[in-house]
Image 1 (cartoon, protein in one colour):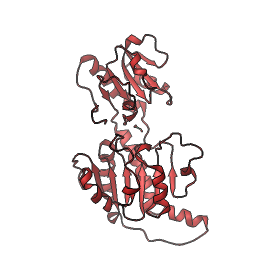
Image 2 (tube, helix red, strand yellow):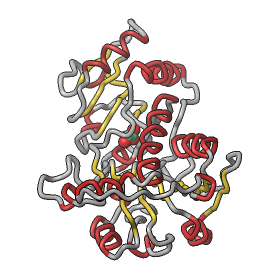
Image 3 (cartoon, rainbow, N blue to C red):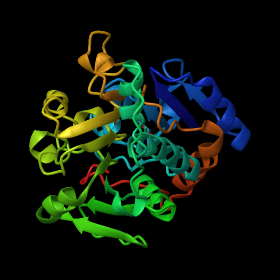
Image 4 (cartoon, rainbow, N blue to C red):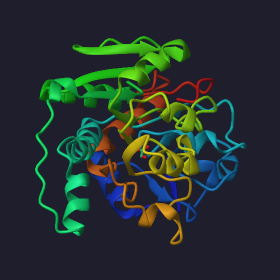
Length: 309
Ligand code: GLV
């Protein structure tokens, strides 16, 4: 019985070490150097080459190396019968909160405005706004969104959330489904996207949505680049509908060298670093799922193939 790790863009050495540390009896191999394809029962993947999982006739489970699973469902040849699991990790949630908090405070304390002033050697003070009168709207109240919502609310912000199904988080007003999206947006000063990427959410961050926010709102996208219609963001910024955006994810990653986002003064670009899975922190849950698979027990953090998250 073997676990295979498949990724073209991650350094896989720390993953092998962490898995062996979690269980020294594991046979861990790295694609494309596996010895016997028939021995592979469990695949740990991040953006694997499409179709490659069909090469393993005895595969019983596929795990994402991160929180998102869209990269797995993007594979048209993903064997339909396979259970798919993802990572749920407190450290991942904490890293995400820290990133979001940084972006929120940058906008809230108007560092963007002061940067513009600095470029022109201008000395103007702006009175700070109140946290309780600033509304942070989080799209997606799953493990990551829910955690950040709770923490930002405890900091003193007014936090609201929007999701497909009803969620209940203390002090966070929850809006549900398409019918309540407009109300949610109308109240949101800082919009955080933490939605899973599915056919229904692809392109959801578009001009029509931005126009429903109060003028001068701020966008933080830490979900997937495909959520955002990139040219609509430029339009919303140029029209003054949005004051700025902090983007960690892009339709094409790495962001192409000639992409207009790099030079746009109202956009902060970071290289998909908001929350990076720490192999040491998540190896125990991967090993647990491997053992559960062997024993035929229910898996941890299994996602719905139908819903795509
Ligand atoms: C990162 O993007 C993840 O899905 O964990």
